Length: 81
Image (cartoon, rainbow, N blue to C red; front, side, top):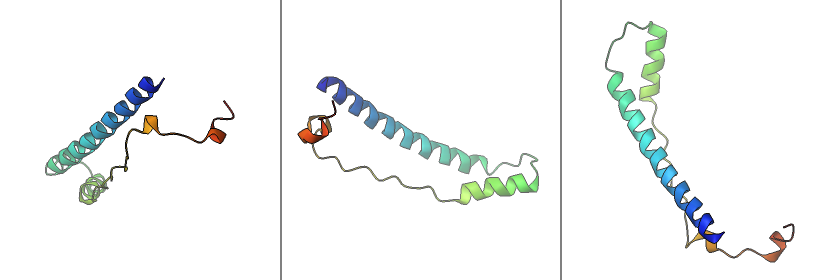
């Protein structure tokens, strides 16, 4: 069970890193495509320009101290199991 928990934690970390990379690439693509005129209405163009101009939110990594899968938990929390 501990091994599965560790594998799940590793997959979550990898998924988080991939999501951050994808968000960065998506923002870069938005910035690059905003330069093109596609014949869209002024309202749609203004909306796209606002999306590009909006600063991206930085996601700070969560502090991790050691292997969370091996963290001891008080017995009272496991009483329900």
